[in-house]
Length: 116
Image (cartoon, rainbow, N blue to C red; front, top):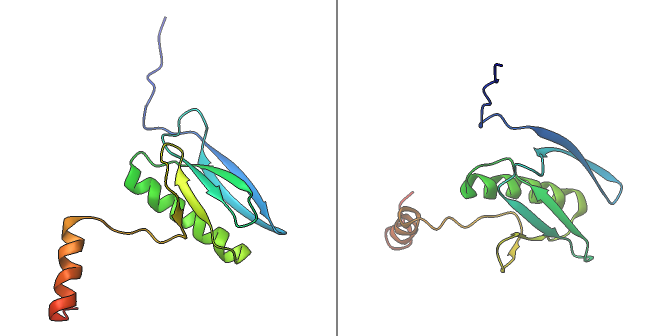
């Protein structure tokens, strides 16, 4: 009996269509069984959506959710609040704050010395 080798990095995807105010958004996301990060997205009218990320790291998952949230904001014209399912605080909008020490020092240097 011969067993086939399974590649753990091979990820199965599914196509999803979201209907928001008459517009259709087409996205390809990870199957629910192998997604590591799930984002809860809340619209201004109280509707709640879930987006399952394909990314394996939190940094890449934040970028992926940011693109999805930006497209929702562009289609609906509403502000969107979102968070990962294991977090308690919501983020507003699609912009992600970069919190690395390098970026903070660069921002501080730009404030004092006007570097570009």
